[in-house]
Structure formats: C-alpha cells, structure tokens
Image (cartoon, rainbow, N blue to C red; front, side, top):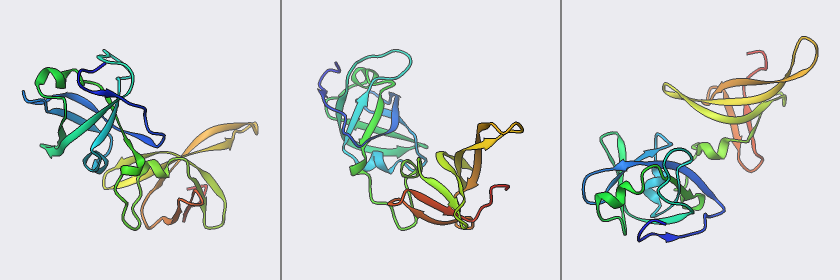
Length: 192
C-alpha cells in the first residue's frame, strides 16, 4: 500500500490516460507521461486512480485514489503534485503507476471534436452503406489523425482473413460521426 493514499475502487467508467514517469524535484512533484497530445483529462480531474505498472517493479498493489492539488504543462511534459505526496521519496514510490480518470470527469468536447476513446469500436460505413470495418485504434500522422479499421477480407482461396484499412479522420473524408448509433459515415471506397 502507498503511504498516505487511500485504497479505492476503480470507477466503472475509468479510462487509462497516462502513467507516472518519475519524481520531479524534491517537494513531492512527479512527471506524468500522458497518453494524449492534449491531456485535458489530467488537468480537469482532481481524483486520479492509480494501479501498479503492468511491467517492471511494482511499488504497490491494488487501486489507490490520488487527490491532485495541481497538474500543469512544463517543458513539453506534464508535472503534478498531490495530497499526501510531500517529498521526493513519496513521489518516487509512484513511479510506473498507471493513471485512470473517470470518463464522467472529462471536459465536454466541442462540436465536431471527439475523444479517441469514444471512436474506438465504432463501425465505419461509406456513403453507399457498405461496411468498411470497425475502428480499432487511431494514429497521429503529422497534422492529422488516422482511423485504423479492422475487417475480414477473402483471400485467393476464398477463406476469410483479418485485414486493416486506414482512413484519414478529416472532414474531406468523414461525413458524420454518430456516437449514439456507434457509426462513422465516410466518403471512402473499399478499394482505396
């Protein structure tokens, strides 16, 4: 157990948003490696749920709640401090911890903006209604984001095999995103 931090249950809507990289300074601050280029969820939530690292040394077990005092950008990374993490030793004990935030505490996305986590699992169809696949991940490719779709493709013998399709997530190709219907409609053909 981490000294000073309370054990907690992971919320049902928890999303993994980053991990603690290392201590930062001597007053209990720590560096955070965010999983998003825009780590707004880290800044908006004051309750982070910590689970131990999946690999490497584990300094604690179970789920703990970290009450964040402040999180901010610093030199291209995120640094934070929290209640009950008052010195470098306490911050070092957090190294490798996976950070989860309740999805309900994410800031509301603006019109035509989406959290990647909300797009994963959506079915993608073209304007003609032809199913192109399901979003399995998103990639950052320079200035744009790319949808990675998985689908089944017939091989030369007619057997089905898994395949991937990449579609830029830009308005030139994306007509509509319906989170309620779990569908993205695109201007794209299967032979592109």
